[in-house]
Length: 302
Image 1: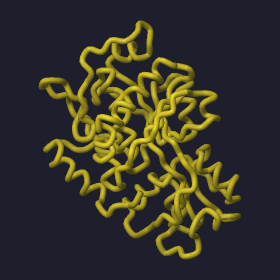
Image 2: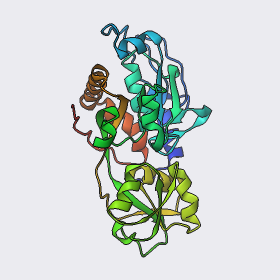
Image 3: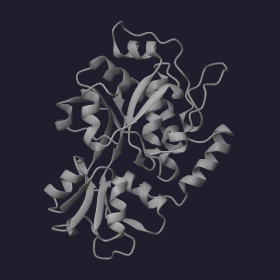
Image 4: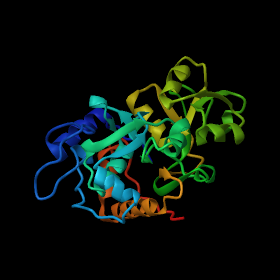
């Protein structure tokens, strides 16, 4: 993926004119009374399922009857999950969460978002604090021991971010023994230590790596390429991504362990969005304002 020159601010303005003509991307719009109800404004304007019916006792039935869903997402990651106007998160993860909600007949205004950082995604699901987590959440075998995943809905790759004037670090192989910032408990943090023997400087959210990098307390920051691209876009001229992505990070939707029916439902929603153009539209209207829109990934049904 290449970083585009269009800024998020300009992208938001263009999106308003092209799609909605009013409101702001990520704003909590009201469902519209037309041929069929819709679930919000901008990229989150999705057709609501009409009076969906589900198996008695299923998670889908409970959520549809409640008319609301609790979604955990990131609040500090441009393009995928960033807290925006009116304390409503915005980005591709938010759009994917709203897609799942819409197929349960739940409008965007009835989604209850909670900030989930890397360290609390599993606990939030295990303790029933959220119904799903859509938060740049890499599917891996260790996590599948305690939660289940639908997807993947996106493929990212770990990369390295440095100051724009740095000429010595060209990739992860140059980080051995050097201080590198990443989020504690994340896949990128584990990788950079285990595979490249960097000295981890841990934090709780990725945005907290930026000042230590500016102040040269660390030489680099590492996480997934799409997250780093968002920081580059929002901080013009300060940072750059070096080298190519060196891992594959399949983003999945986390849900309670062994809720097989709910996982199958979400997988069906994702698969349909891959083929009918909805996934591409949601990406183009959010992260696609900075990144090229890729092909959707292949689902892994397990």
